[in-house]
Amino acid sequence: MKKLNATALGLAFGIIWAVAMFLVVVISMYADWGGAFVNVMSSVYVGIESTWTGAFLALPWGFVDGFIGLYLMGWLYNKFA
Image (cartoon, rainbow, N blue to C red; front, top):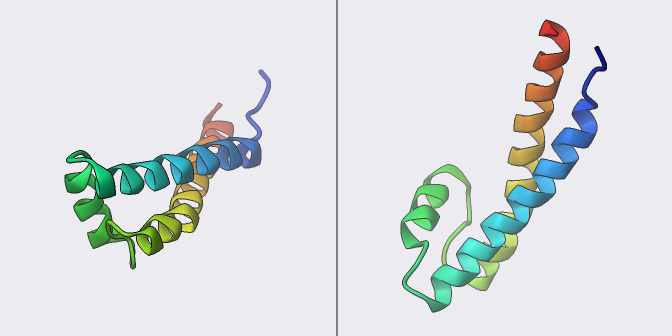
């Protein structure tokens, strides 16, 4: 059985999660959607709020969080498979 490339998995999801968090913060600034998500994320990640600064802070936080999460998932999968 072929193993997963944990680094590639982490990088791919890190980018996706960073962009998703950025977009939700931007959308919450201009529409009445995503505010609850931003409030929850602001309790977890320092600096995230419904501002442009918060949106740009969501990018590195989202990337690091997504990368670590999926890297660990891929690493664990490789250990158990």
